[in-house]
Image 1 (cartoon, one colour):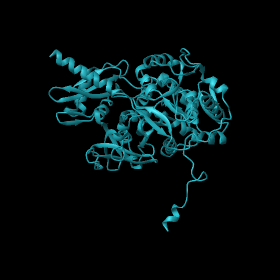
Image 2: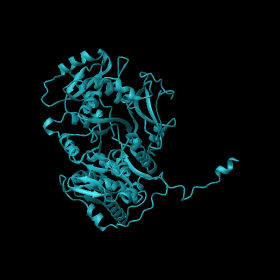
Image 3: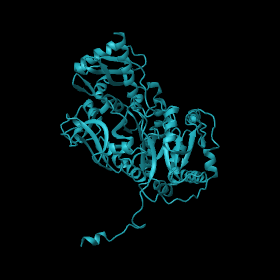
Length: 547
């Protein structure tokens, strides 16, 4: 009688394609007058956001933008960028948010490779957009975002974003995508080796990410969220859609400083924020006279790099409750979380911080996250020692790399997405990253985790940031080389830091060279290790020539 269960067809009544765009319609209908966005002196309710989104979407249609077109956006975290997370896909087009710190050559590549039909750009980035056009030898239509609170910049478009709002239809009708597998967004990886790859998100994945995040983070209704994660990065961890679903109040910040973050937390009673470990380190090192009193607990989601345990311990003292999460551009952002376990309450503060720095277990919408042997594909023992590669399977894994079927096939070989992250799995099932596979240092046959060495360096009270890479060495093949950013006014030197390392780690793990410098970072706060690796190679080559 099995055939009776197969007798039903999908119908409009029982099968609606999943899309995060539906969250705006629901929230605007239920909570129309609640404050949705705060940006400096600007305030918008959810009804006003909905109306502006519809107007912009209808104007984009007037400009010829429709299903399958790519609309590239280069903007800071302002109301316009959040609105475009709805307005662009409402037309059926694909939203391509571009890293605001990229150089013209990479922007030119993204615009060309991504088949951009239209560019919407903050005037602060007009000069770099024009240079990108010159490199490509063609000029695309541009819509200018003119932010009165921004740094200014030349207008290069034929019309402004506010023109789109003013000329648009507030009753613009949309029915959602016909297929939830349809492309929603195009995000380019950081391009640490070769050209960046275009990662394609679909509506289903973004919907499920937005649904899974409130469960994992235990979000209440109406959170007050400080959007300190750049919205060009994994679409701001998909929080533009998540916070709409929760009918939250989104406080936008254009330029992140410790003083500004503390001020906004106090002024708006911020309940939640997200940021890379570098943001947490910035808060810890904000001078006392630049901090506002925070009289309530602020819940923080941190990701981007394994946070040093000392940083987690430091922000806890400030009254921040931190949850470490893990993910990649290819997984819409976070797909694993370090859930607090009750038995950790009996541990020392340092031991608690160490546990909280683990990447943890899968989010509710993650079907499988595991650590496997790279050769056999078998799960590694849960002994906290055996190292393997993190693999991920689920609906929040990208469709694939845009116009790159070879890279897509390689990433999905074996039936799961291969992350490129080396990790172990502890007896309780929690995953802990040991390194990026390309960052493991092999010295005299010994594997050295750069993350482990960095964690020890971060214990030094004067170390703000540390990054460890391989330094080519004639005798050992390669040895650890540390690049360290110190607190302002610190009297520490390379010799004193090496002495500190001698007291705190095994001899073969100690950095043989320590460079005191400001570390190069991406806009999301990740340290650009590829720049440091090149610098280490250059140092080695220079030394060899001198010898």
